[in-house]
Amino acid sequence: MEQPKQKITSSNEGESDFRLLPMFIHSKRAILNPINNDQCSFGYAIVLFYHPGEWKYRFKSLISLKLKQRFSEHKLDQIKYPVQIGDIPAIEDQLNLRINVFTFADSSGRRRHSLYISKKYKPEEINLIYWEGRFAWIKFISRLFHDITK
Image 1 (spheres, helix red, strand yellow):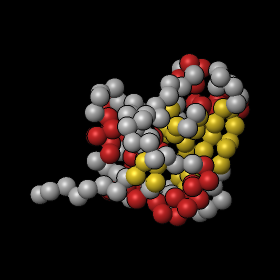
Image 2 (cartoon, helix red, strand yellow):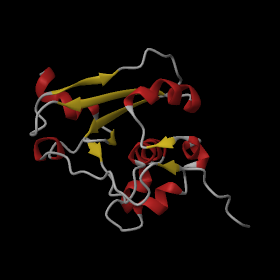
Image 3 (tube, one colour):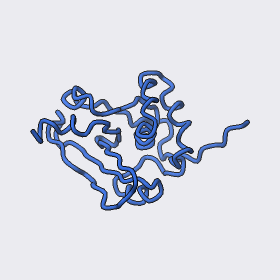
């Protein structure tokens, strides 16, 4: 059976939005930040939310291909990439998912704060971190903010 072609569009095909997290945030082991070779980090974050077992492929060179196979399953192939913060309210309705986005204001990652908090009621909620044009899934929000809230 032939696979349907995905409708993923990117303004900069072939360019990667992959960025390393600052060591302070990386050491908290709260965020799944897969390596990719395109600008679809938002889509990969959503796929990992629904399929955390796919994380085992995070260091393999085929991460983009493995996770992108799940894009049509979650309507992620209908989104224009790269995603901007202003696109999120419409994407929430499209995916039926409440999306919260956090970021950090310094190069070390110590000054973390919210960037977008959803006002919509949806059955599921995902927390993402956004920096330098990249999104990643915050799997353990309590780990990320523990030093601020203790």
